[in-house]
View 1: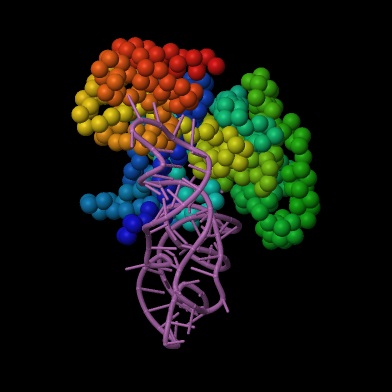
View 2: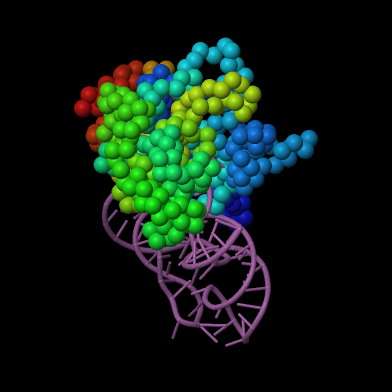
Length: 427
RNA sequence: GUGGCUGUAGCUCAAUGGCAGAGCGCUUGACUGUGGAUCAAGAUGUUGUGGGUUCGACCCCCAUCAGCCACCCCA
């Protein structure tokens, strides 16, 4: 290896074992999403930068998106998130879609950030949204989907939890403390920062913001109050629905969960891994006007997004990633020597016609070499046609797993293998 | 964007400023028509890259790239 061009910073390569994990994740996500009746969709990977500038604020676009001019000079972004594309897609066909919409997607996104643990510049994200209605029961459905996913991959309620709060509840709670409307967004940010700062610094920061000592005390009491949700009709209905949906053990009220995004208006939630520092696995919430910024009539909805990087770290931590199966086919047909290359090809084709996956060794080689290869790639059956078999119209099949072999008529070989495979399945 | 740690064989890692190594893996053979085990032999490096200091640099210095970690940020 002399001058291998490096991969782009923050990207990952998916060799077959990694690709298998990604595909498995995708399949679980699909299964869970579809079990709630959600439809798969996707937007473009390239978008005009204006799409994000309109909604997400300039910081996101200028500092965290991959942006480049196309040949016409127009600024194009590799999509850093899906929500604006979703909003446009919904707005464009607002008149013909059947609401409520239940849509999900799993695809690549790019953010120009410094890579670190759980964060890459190129990643995959599961987005799922319920659009067009505004009930707390819908919020509960999304949180339940999140819980159903955790259950499907084997994460327990001891390992992960979903913290739930409501912005309207917090807003009125702050009002009760006498915190003026214009200060509340800053206080939301302030609450969000609490677990990242030392208590002393946090207190100082609060006073600096303009909160009185009394308000600080009230705020702390608020954040500790595990019964606060009972003051919110929305959350009362939410938790009632959660209980009925059967997976409420994953969800907990937590007044300190705010979420940074400004477009969330009601219930917000965040899933975390519960041991250690508790990494955030996914986040989501309720919004009131998804499509307003792209020119549609306001539509409410609820949704969340989960990145593939952090969930994989958590799954790996708990040993929940399925073992890699390297075998791509159960059968390998060997080539005995130069004069016997055609019959193996015929046999391989016959096996495939019978529904078996077959790998044909590419050239004549010593049998030990071909067997070693079969072993390395995880093939179970090795088929040999040498001079003896050829004369007798037979094949020799070795079952590498059971370490036994048989020499049988060529016409019976496929059936013999399929019989053994079926046995394995019934074990 | 800020700061810290790291970069040596395919992999995991050693090597006081003085001949660049081990384990695993790999290749070949022991095994003339049969994989994993064992044994033996063998191959593999511009020490991330570019400069500098030095008689001499994997080692010290500077820059750069990448990875990891913490900030920042989190759509």
